[in-house]
Length: 230
Length: 230
DNA sequence: GGCAATTATTCTGTATACAGCATTCAGAAT
DNA sequence: ATTCTGAATGCTGTATACAGAATAATTGCC
Image 1 (cartoon, helix red, strand yellow):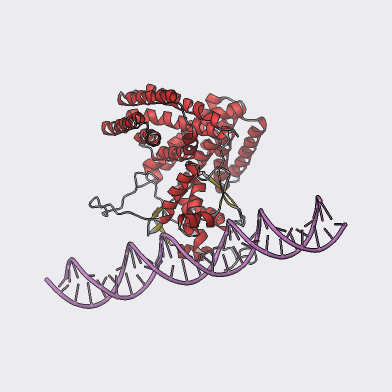
Image 2: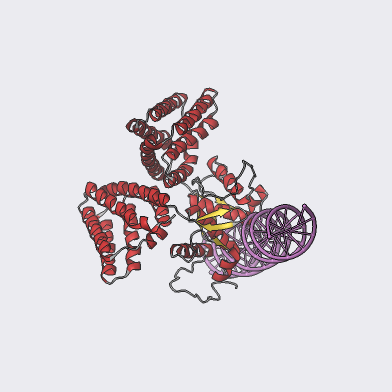
């Protein structure tokens, strides 16, 4: 296996767009997806040679990606024993959701004050697209847009540090949230809450937006807490 | 980071202190110190071969450390051009301090409710040690203990995610705060504020502790903002 | 003499090779 | 039969080597 540019190695799985000239970043995203989707189950050790040959890359960039995943908190790096996929206890998930809630509440207030109308309309557009996914039953698309909308609202607060820490926790929670499947009626409820969020944002009603988001995230905990058995 | 570290089952019988020498972690800490102390000035490119030979290590663990530093936000990793030490604009610093303030305010309230008396007394001990540094004019020791105390108070809130994000931002701010030199009278003021903090914590006065910390961090911004020229 | 193009050098990105530690399995002793 | 010890195997940690890209330098041309 030589260079990914000259020889395009056949990808066994679809939807790998980014073939950027930074292999470790590609590996990083790939591994993150594998963890989120459960291909690498929590608690399992990651064999570098094995994964490396599976992805068709050498160990060096793979190790760099693993080091970064450790920084993101998705794996633990145990000396002389390698990387193990992090296993979140129920309390940790709740703590993360508490912090995310606090961050989003604060971001919501700032966003109502600072956001440009253009920025708000872009969030609205994402919301409409998400509605399309909802109507067509596209769960994965809905899930991704859901996260993007929350990130976008945080971004409207125009505080890079806030976005960073929010993104960090959001990433750690992705796997959990991905597991937390909801019934159709709860799904409709969540969509309604989102509609309410967008409306509050468009009215720049800081108190209402903050409250709705807070409620939304508390319910998120209710949804996922039963799927945590450790 | 400082998670309540997952259990290594029956491994730790006695308090055997085995130095785990993982080179990339040592390099990571070393580089972080070099950035904080200004040995690697902001905006400068990090030459891997140069630094590597300077530290007497190969490029591989050095690169892993750099990747981790990028995760911490202390350097930017530009494709095909390597690592450059991150240069913080004034607004970014202010944004970070705003988030830290929010985090510490929340942590303070939780800490007053959840902290054990033993935990509080340990913070008091750190504070007393810091006072010793203050009286003997040990600026570096004071500085380190100052950060440790803030981290300890956050830790009392017993929320790993909260500690993690706080630690992340604290690390990014270290260099800035290290630069922000204060005159003797301001130093005395800061010490007095800390004394007030500890007192509020010991009384478990959530409102007061939160308020004092908030004021403390707003003043921190006042102290450092003039030393930022970009 | 200045500008542009081409070469030369340096540095990053990736692969491979080697050494050391951990885990496991087998064999011997109690 | 059980337990302890030791070798064998596999994996991690680090170093080195090589290829490609970016920047610097030099030379040719106008």
